[in-house]
Image 1: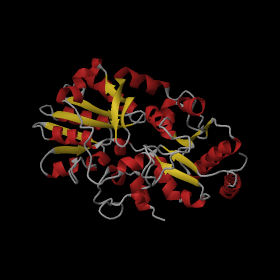
Image 2: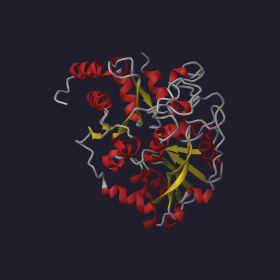
Image 3: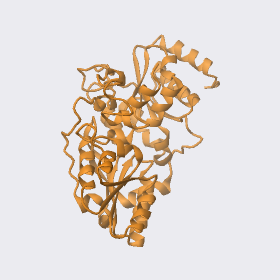
Image 4: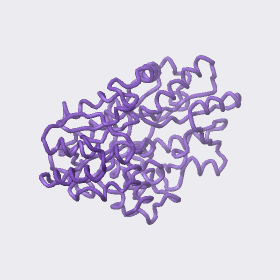
Length: 373
């Protein structure tokens, strides 16, 4: 692509779109979701080129049953629950019941900016058990791994990590490999009768790719025949990435392209990946909207068992737990646009969310509400 001037790129997209039917491109990064909404990118594209949000927000894909278990642990005497701010606001299966509400009721729940903050909290409170609820994808996993290594090295025995960490590849495979996902049988957003959303290409997450490397997404064209573009986060990045996807669909030549090459290397961050492999092992994990996905979680290895919150306090989320009326799971799968949920903007708003997609700064519902067109 010779020019990155937005007008030129849009003209090229529109010209190619005339020869295509309905095209659905999914981003699987919450930062992409918010950036797309902030730039008004959807409104600039031809009507047959549709951008849809997938499971790119780590707080959003954390199921209600997992939140319920955190609420239970927060009630154990002597326990301090520490986590990122968004997770504290996510309701469990009962509307309004969140860690933030439990704090108002007397539980010791604290917001931190990193797992190291929680480790320092454990040092400062030797008579208490500090549990860090670690949520995130490959981007936050290395920092959590480093924290566990330090806890073991310094033998801080009143600290543990409850790993809610997940990896993106298994989720993308679950979406791309779902019956009808790439065949045109499922139409996606607001196709209430479909079990899968048709996906014609992926905007791959730039932050994740910094760790995993761009080659981690090579399976998209090679195994599923779908184009993928590792994208940056500026409006120019996103528009260029959409252009590349549309061009590959127009030519019928699916490939993997690293648009974010200024920060993403093919092999990723080898040191960060090694740290994660030392501390965590792949495990089956529950995702909101997607159910249990084999090998998609990161469980604390037995070598670090003394600092594993799941072993220390038990952790058995109910896979059927869900907040009544919340359609966040369908939004995450691309089956429903946020505006298609009957609660959106009515009984579900950022100040009183029914589900995590309206809570998180990376949630599709929060983005749609904030940047309503």
